[in-house]
Length: 303
Image: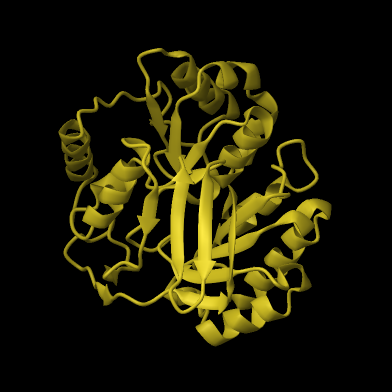
């Protein structure tokens, strides 16, 4: 069994190789009955990180199921005045898209701090992370050669890499736009609040985890597309589903085809984004280009 110390040592080593020094929030080890910490503790750590000129980037430890609790208490002027990298995925979607809505800053849907404790099958995730955060050249994403969907953090020796698959070209076309999205059910928590980013002109990137079965994903997608400015969405990229979600290509094709809000828009699915590995690093608020057809292509042009 791999210990928490083993994970931390590997994480520290990997960041050191990238020329980065890690520091931690004062309350990072707090745990309450919801496996979180108080709102005040999390807000204090986030404000301190943005205010500290020695901090170049902020990584979430894990997703943060209740990260939307923080939104009414954040100092948006402080965040806007101190732009820096913020990276994580899943439930942190609420924080990332709220920052986009309130400040216009680009954040990144990508690996957590904890993700860097993955001993094996991590190189492609690391490569995409470095391309997005250490360079400003456009990034051409391609299907990974293999992927995993396992509880690597419980047993690093029990990994089961699967052969890579092509992207699913569900609806043809081309589009470019501002990257908005992340975890679908978390993004939907922002509906009707001052923290929901504009969808007009957006290239949507959406994913969900094993708890989102096809019917759940379908109604969550419908809810998002019912927003008034969803008519301005330019295209949709869907991340790879975990096996436990029981989503198939045929079922997802049916879901997409029944969404009138997606009529005529390019839709690409089964991409390396979300809760399987490897995981691309995507700029929330950046810009991307999408081509869906016999030779589908996905390019991050501003990050």
